[in-house]
Picture 1 (cartoon, helix red, strand yellow):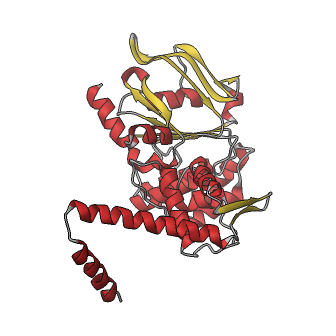
Picture 2 (tube, rainbow over the protein chains, first blue to last red; picture 1 turned 180 degrees about the horizontal axis):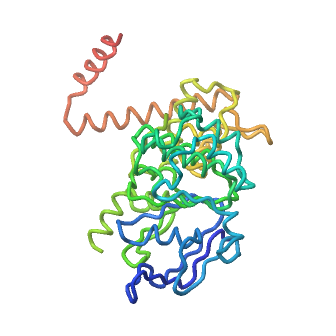
Picture 3 (cartoon, rainbow over the protein chains, first blue to last red; picture 1 turned 180 degrees about the vertical axis):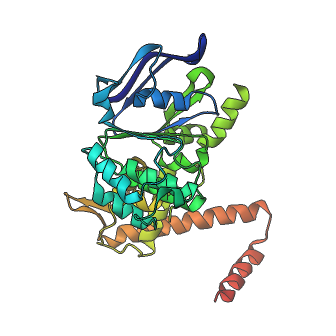
Length: 234
Length: 122
């Protein structure tokens, strides 16, 4: 069954200026997918449309067969590009919020991940560094048992050691019934965790897609190399 | 600690190579249970389906056995492990000799260099 389906999706912030122009995709369950593309190609817009934070001008999006709306919010765990939490809250309070908000939130898992990362749950968010805030946010997002995880640039703001931890947390959370979509321009860092990839160009045009391993076997190239070649000629 | 891989070769091939090495070197000994797909994926930060594919490769070679729902175990058949060890050693030597031949290093010299290198090892 498809976890996500986008049909003839169009989105413009300014009249006639389409960030996504007739975008179509079908994504099955049990996959880790890399949505890869240069800045401004519509990655975050697409993610926000799927999360139900933006409305498309045309077209439709379904998550597990359900049109995006209240019901799909319970199925989607979304990591935004930037943390949105109130800085005066403590990590503990935030966990309380998530527990109350999301029936699928696993509190024990959240505390385990926090302690693995050496984050003090009593700390106020505003006292934490940018990278640590991002880690807290990822912990909360990955502690839900969702059908679809949308991770918008999950590793952009953290150091290489934390990147590894984050990627292994993502992999560790893998569930054959859930799908994880990761957007990033740091392709080398995510290569080995991906099942499939989608290269997005401006206007949300898909210029290449497929299985990461098959692509490496058939071309003898890494996704990163391929990305550079494709976008040099694009 | 995530493992790093050459990005232009299939990850499952590289992962299978490393796990094969662990079996040959008895880091995973004969008859021992190996970590689950999930554990290996978390340890290496590799996609679980890719890990599964690497393990299937080793199963195909007879190095690993699935025991029902218990998990995957290193074979107890030491002959299979020994054969794999010889194959690996042979392919290592083959590529080494081929590289040396490209540089036209005389056989006598090559053999004495190998001996010297071995003697100098701590």
